[in-house]
Amino acid sequence: MKRKINMDSVYVSCPEFENKRFNLRFISTNDCDDLLKVYSDKKAVPLFNSDNCGGDDFYYNTRERMKQALDYWKFEYERKGFVRWSIIDKKDNTVIGTIELFHRESKDYFNNCGLLRLDLRSDYETKANIIDILELIINKIYQLFECNIIATKALPIASERIKALEELGFSSTENKLIGHDGREYSSYYLKKR
Image (cartoon, rainbow, N blue to C red; front, top):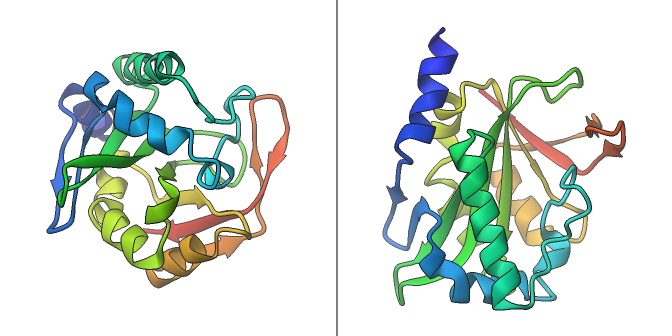
């Protein structure tokens, strides 16, 4: 019962998190233009985690397609599928990426897991920025999503991201995430409670 109460709360009222540099808040339709710069960034898109996303590669190069994604993310929140936060750089009040999180129940190693997706504009893909952003939420994920493990994908080409994750206490795993269709996905990093 405890899990249901806590997990429902993140879907009743989406919490905000803030430090000196960044603010995390629930996505808004007003974020469309800033997010279009993120999701049309050809250097950034290859680092996004599109595992198990039905073939979506998250490359959006029109305002209409970006708005469709925002509408879908809101729909998923309403049906308690996942939460998507916008990441705001407070210096110029610009949205520079998103964080998606959800509780994953599965028959593979990634059971009872908070799965985190971090999508950042390429000029923010630095170790220091990633640490500043993830430190806002990392320690709250276990309670918010009632999980024992946080998992996130970092491809070998994402050297800054990997350095940041390792500094935050994540370690790489050989375990494969098994998709809905049985496909295996690799390059995951884990942080245990």
